[in-house]
Length: 186
Image 1 (cartoon, rainbow, N blue to C red):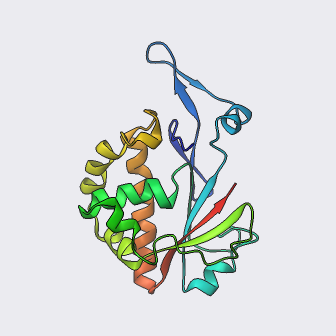
Image 2 (image 1 turned 180 degrees about the vertical axis):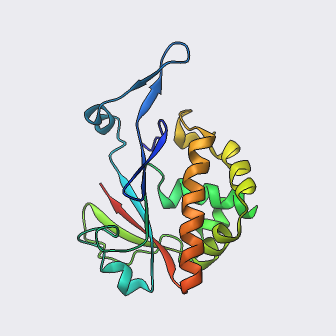
C-alpha cells in the first residue's frame, strides 16, 4: 500500500513525507513511526542524478545522498506507479505509454536484492520535468492527488513541493548530461 500523508518537510536537502491522518474537524493527528510502518509507509525513494547506469549502481549500498549524488528523498511516491501517473498528466499521454518506455523503471542493480533496488527514469521524463513551469506542476497535482493509491490523503500543495524539487533535480541533471534514477529501500 502506498500512502502520502501529511506535509513535506526538508531534511538534509531531501524531502520527507510526515505521516498524518485526518481526524474529526480540521485537526490532524500525527502517527508515530511505528504506526506508519504498520500502515505500510516504510518505503523510501531517493530520486537522484548520475552520469550513467554504472555510476548510479555505485549508490546501491550506502544510498545516493550518502554517496554524494544530487538527491531528492521522499517517502511513498514510487517511480513505477505514482510518479508514472504524474508524468502522464504532465506530458498529456496515457500512463501506459509513459511507463511502457524501456528505460522507465529499468533495473540497474541485481534482481536478487531483497530490499534495495535502483531503477532508471528515461531522459524524456527528465526533460519533461526540467522544462515544466511551476504553474503546470501545481496544476497537475490537483488530479494527481486524487489517485486511488493515495487513498484520499494526498495534499496537492505537498505534491507540488515534491514535483518542484524533482523538476529542479531534473534540470541540474540535464545541464550536466546526467540521467535520473530512483534508489528504493524497504
